[in-house]
Structure formats: C-alpha cells, structure tokens
Image 1: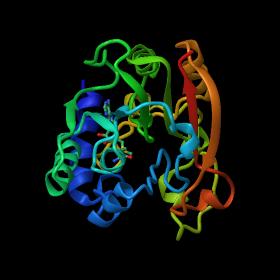
Image 2: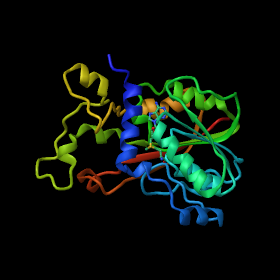
Image 3: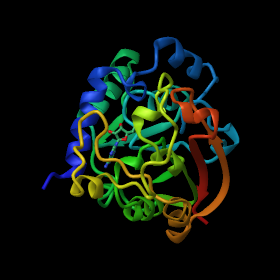
Length: 255
Ligand SMILES: C[S@@+](CC[C@H](N)C(=O)[O-])C[C@H]1O[C@@H](n2cnc3c(N)ncnc32)[C@H](O)[C@@H]1O
C-alpha cells in the first residue's frame, strides 16, 4: 500500500519544481520591506494575518508545514527567530535558498506533522501554519503536538480549506467549465478512501482530505486550545469563489 504521506512529500517536491504559488520564495524587495517594518504574512491566499494576532507574543516562531521561503523568510527579516518544519525536501531547499541569498541562518527541520514533533515542550511562542492539513488524514497529533510545543499563553495560527470545496470535481470548478457546478463527493472527502474505491491518485492532486469543522476547530479545542479569532478568505482561481469563501484561518491560544 502507498505511504500517502511519502507520496504527498514527493508531490510537493514536484509542485515546487513546477512553480506552485506556495513554493515561490519571496523576492529581495519583499524581504527588505519586511526588514523595514512592513511585515505581511499569510495563512490563506489573499488576506494577510492581522498583526494583532501575533504582536507581543514573542520571537520564537515555528513555521509548521511552512517551507518554501515565504512566511519564514519574512518573519526572519522582521526579527523573529524561526524554525521551519516541513516534509518536502524541495520546500526546505527553497527556504535555504532565500536564507543564503539574504545572508541569514534559519533552522530547517524535515519531518511529518502526523508524527510527534522533534521539539521540546513549550519551546515556541507561536506557530504559523498556512493551509496544509488537507494533505494529512488525521489531525489529532498535529493539534496535540502544537499544544505541547507552545509555551503557556502561546498561540497557534492555522489556515485551512473550507471543507465544502471538496464536494466538487476539479474539472467542474475550472473557470472555463460550462458543466453544472454539481455536488459530486460526500464530505468528509478522503483521498485514501476514494483510492480504495478505485480512484486513481495522481501527482497532480495527491492524497487530500477535506476534514470536518469539528475535526478542525473542535480538534483544536479538544487539544486544549481556546479559539480567540477567525476569518474567512477566498481566491479567484475557480468558479466556486463566486458563491462562497474558500478558506478559513483561526487563532487558537494555549491557556
Ligand atoms: C501550502 S504549502 C505552505 C507553505 C508555504 N510556503 C507558506 O509558508 O505559506 C503546504 C506545505 O505543507 C507541507 N506538508 C504537507 N504534508 C506535510 C506533512 N505531513 N508534514 C509536514 N509538512 C507537510 C508541504 O510540503 C508544503 O510545503
């Protein structure tokens, strides 16, 4: 049986070669803007994370599933001490390439967030986790390990896909499609179950999982977090964005 985490890791390596948006490192100009006090970071495609979510929380930041030379680079430019934990070799290489270009050192750790994190208890002030948990099947360890590695009063900021997106077939969501936008997949969408039912999982999509709001928000509260704030976001890449927001971001605090 395919190790789906390993398959997705190779897929992210391939997407990185192919120039997926979430794999393109920030420019030197972006880096300098951040150095000059204009920090703009993202959990979802379009809306920046409100600065009041992280202002005053402390400098030790974990970029969870956050390789690619984006949020980690901008945070470092802004004076944060960042560790990037990601399961794609190429995403970490992209992170390293920005660090070499700009002349700083950043802690890069390759690993799988479905397993215990390789960090001490209470070693971070906050965690930034841009949309990534659609690539893992079970969120329990991700939430409990995030809770464990945060100091008391620290915070987890997570972006995730609106589960509803997974009800529709990719080809129907295409902006140029003329087919009815009809529900195809019952939720929660589970790439592994669909494969068991005969679906071919390609490197273009990998194994994806919609999750429920209960496993996203309820999972965070079950791990001990208190949810303090939330926003919705969208992008303009598919037909569905004319009808609904496509992403959710939340701020969860360790009491
Ligand atoms: C949308 S990208 C987010 C990174 C983006 N460059 C950023 O900082 O905003 C999702 C990331 O999740 C990572 N990822 C997927 N599955 C993972 C897993 N099981 N453990 C750790 N990282 C994982 C991918 O390698 C990819 O870099």
